[in-house]
Length: 128
Image 1 (spheres, rainbow, N blue to C red):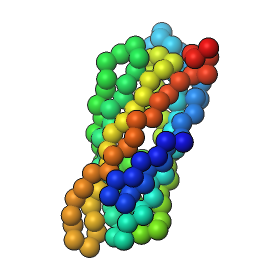
Image 2 (spheres, one colour):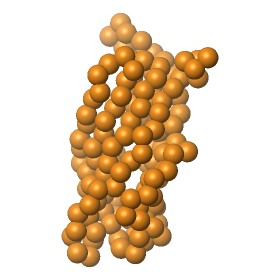
Image 3 (cartoon, rainbow, N blue to C red):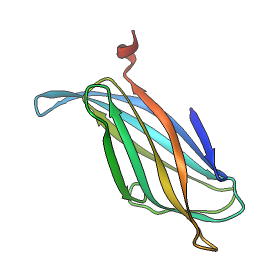
């Protein structure tokens, strides 16, 4: 598990290889990831948006921005956490993601970024 703390917000990431399939006559590799966002600060915070950089070893880096995570903009109280699952399709068996969440402190509307550490994807057969 990969972890990183920014301004009292701890991000933990765990990845899984989900399998391969053909799409548009091309092999794709499916990876899943579980992210836990733990509020270790003294203030309630809300995740408002995300920014991802997706690295596929056979393609250029892709940038992805969006509101919230999986359709939610969770408010996380001090001492609580929010966990969600998502996934990524790559055209190679090796890749990585990193990025940040845009957050806001609920009691004073101060905005800040929480960095998501780089986490790697690798199909088990790719490393042999």
